[in-house]
Image 1: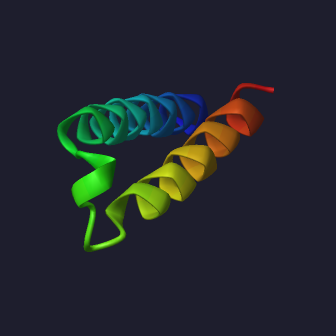
Image 2 (image 1 turned 135 degrees about the horizontal axis):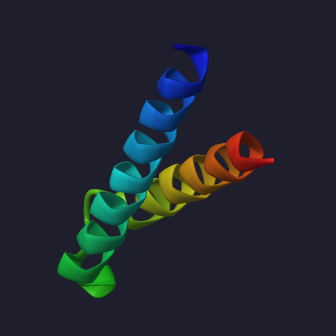
Length: 56
């Protein structure tokens, strides 16, 4: 049961990473008045680090 839960978490991290990467492609950094690009970059880095630690 614990292993299945970890697999579910890993799957969700993968989905989160994909969504954030897709969001990057939709944002024109020159028109990013909301400051979303740096926030998305930080979010992606955090998700990828967490995923990497989970795999190890």
